Image (cartoon, rainbow, N blue to C red; front, side, top):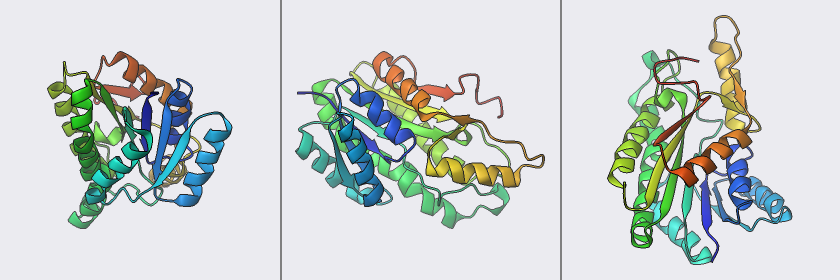
Length: 246
């Protein structure tokens, strides 16, 4: 039985590229997103390219629904081997730290922290029994390196990054892998990339443009991380570290 990757937050940018990259390797693809129209359009595109893809409409800001969602995917495909989790929309922008309040953090936490934890918990028994599985978490650069006027998302993502690091160490030797791709660039062809780029230009004193990355490059990083399993975190651009700013 061929392997299955579930792309949580499947959109026109990174989600589509990850689906295509793993699909080229024979993976069947579960596409998870809230907006049915875009989800169905992406499913049709992938199917036309010879990739077996099935849409699953879900609101990932509802952590309590994650176990049933995982079970629905498993019921259809018979298994889940890899999860790429990276849902975020143009509605989720940055907030200056001086203006950040508890309500904003509470609104962001289900999607960016609580649901990925619930997804992983729903999958760990299957993966542990099989001795194989991979959880790939997409993060923005502010999860690793705080930047002025670009808070809100960062504090919540940093909590998920902390969890991922602990998880990676605990799963060592089990055959189950957890890794995170931390991106210090706007993702081309994505809704959030366009929205964030506009916001960054508006807050930049000199009008400097933020770097843009082709999502196919990021998908290649994920394939390399999945196959090698030799690092807990991959930065893009690769020259970035938590001590250097973009």
